[in-house]
Image 1 (cartoon, helix red, strand yellow):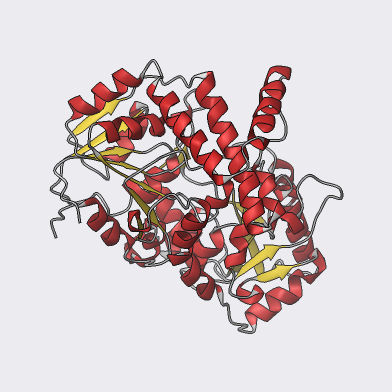
Image 2 (cartoon, rainbow, N blue to C red):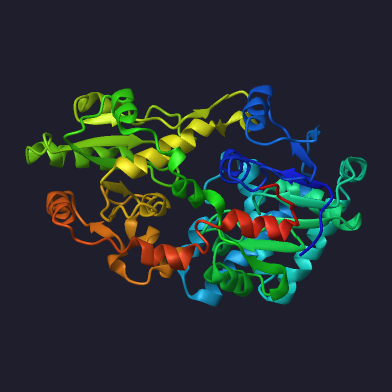
Length: 461
């Protein structure tokens, strides 16, 4: 493994803060840490509670040139076309941009699509990648970026998200300065989406399956540069200190300890626009069958969904649905000020621990609750006809092909089936979610150690 004397950290979003800075990866290390960021003071104060940084460097505003954006989008579109050809899975097309706010953007993406269709072969795609790297180097800010890295005196640069646009330029500058670079693949569903902005010396992946996918979709990356480490986001569930005492958890949210908890976990409005209708249907079925004395619903929304789209449902069922908002800070004036408090780690771990079942539309939350062997019910019907979003498309996405069998989760094919599924779960119908987790995420409780080794971090025990 590489020996590191000073590592730079590039954390583009709140999930990166939660999964990497709040995990044990960078705690108790003897290696100096330099944080490259655009965070506000409140965000920095929260992060500093968990990680000590030797140096903090606020990055200048980065403006992507029109040439960079055009090449980036052409590469994305051409790779989407290629990935469909390779897999035979047309749902990958859903990850292309379809609606554009202005005539100018519509013309821009028309040109993108036209040019992408002229670059069908993988050799042509790789040629586009080379042009993109040259465009990054031609950015007016490139010299300044190179100087920032040089003056920081780091020998390693780590990014928590492989599709961070700004990070691509920093990674290229790092390469020219002989600074070792490492990135992680952000989530289990990312690779078919063709958004790998960074070119790194090392790619850290969740599992052998993800390594295979990276090789399939990015065959130019040598096998020896891809390392299976797992992801640290599941380690929080193995730490008993993250579980809030039951009396406190229940009293804080006025939960009834005599009732079972159904957790409804929402997704963002773009991914799952009909979540309020699903929540309404779940609550309606509970009341219709007079099961409100046996069950209570805890609603956890997507952390970045601060819309009021669920308000009407919460007002309709005030005695049945308990709203449990994620503990994230949100400053609408500064996009980088959307970040989790460490208290949210404990809140989610505790919810997964005390809940009896989680319900959602194909969410990774199935794995979070699966860490405590809690069953997951996937919503598998369309509440709105002729919608742009359909469960048939969603569950045919490439990443759902990782299921070893369909019975790793329960499927709610229509609302009227809810009670019978809950009764099966109550009778002890076993959940097989861990079988799926073992395919998707390796080293579920040891990922931090594996990542530390790959980064060359020395840890004080």
